[in-house]
Length: 393
Ligand code: AMP
Image (cartoon, rainbow, N blue to C red; front, side, top):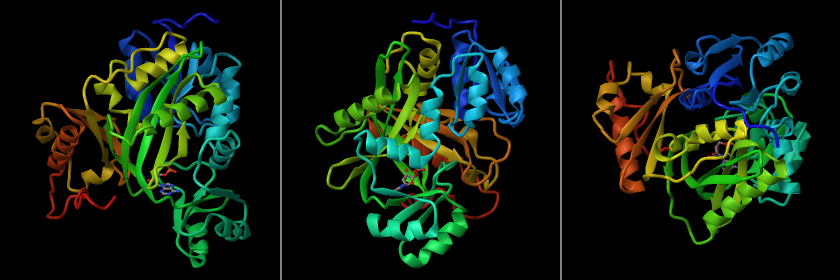
């Protein structure tokens, strides 16, 4: 096995968002250097990196120059062109490997891989044309969700189809195919399992995390979660199986639906730390970010033990509509941790930060974190907080 990449070495991150930022924070704490490359300047990752390279992903000369300066390459989002990673991989190990990226950056490839490998997935049909969509509806039934096969995240590139009459509008809104058509799952709840796998094939996980989405964007995550017997083990077994089948070295998150009749279906894979795992930053011995660092550096993985029940809420740009949120008010909750990503423009739906509460029980943590978030809204103009009513998920 190759030698571990030790503190003092430089980690290269393709992408420059909050996931890279939190990896960089974990890496710096352990004495590593961080270089990031993305098309943007003054980024969440760049602000805490040793070097921020601003270049298009298809600027392969810049990618090669970047790769000469680093000891290992990883990503903080999966929509990186394969040619970019190939150019970098000529100089340094790329972890997770190109194959993992290739499969997970396209929903149709990902679902086909999962179904072919025997993992339970939402009924789906890949579609290239309007006729395929209409034919697909006969197979998956209505209501259905049409999703672009590539470059979708946080509900972008998704449209709910209630009747055949919606197909035109769906294409207009989400744009040209290829697409994937899925039946709308009437789930009881959404779960995720974040895992990590080292170079020697050892696997660790953080157990099941319960997630609530609002307008297709993650809103709240809570752990630990009490589930019907056998479900948590099944979710972890599926996750481990996916890691092994894809030979992942690094962190990967499996998102699940738990159906009303108690079946687990894989919704999506993310080959990197995941928003639902942000609570591991404050609640676990080793966060998902430190785990990513350890895995891609070939170090032994750390303990995933959770030290306290925890709940996390996202802070979206919508929260700024009433003016700068009242940070001091949220800080009056001593068991709530504030994370902000350094983004300058608070667009609606944009992930600007998150709060994590630690408490004696998951229910108290949830109550605390929601209360802390509610104090952030400081309307300059009269109006309702975008966070109320809390129902509309
Ligand atoms: P995704 O980007 O595919 O993870 O979708 C974001 C969120 O949209 C999911 O976490 C669900 O809340 C919802 N969603 C996506 N696909 C489906 C589906 N087939 N059935 C029900 N809800 C879905």
